[in-house]
Length: 138
Image (tube, rainbow, N blue to C red; front, side, top):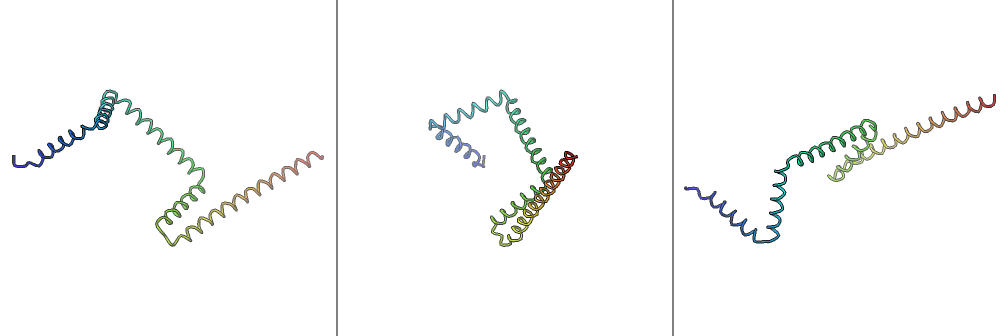
């Protein structure tokens, strides 16, 4: 055989493994790993069960995130803008004023919309109370 590289590598690996196994902690660690592998080969359904549980958990959280996105589009926009702002700061972007201003403007718009909704709700409650008072006085 003209190529002596492969046998030399195999012999070196064997010698290295033998030297490493002289250490008691290494031997006990290898024994534990071999024991774990043998348990998995004897009972592969446990690995499948764990994988199924992880898959179910990922699907659950994906559905939760999608539901939040559907129900709160303003929140999604705000989070995306905040993410862009943070990424820009991390990258040293000097043109963050427009992003920051857009974020502040959208936050201000949301606050104004919420205030208008609260005012309308209060106005409706006041009108309902007046109607009830008028009905009671008759």
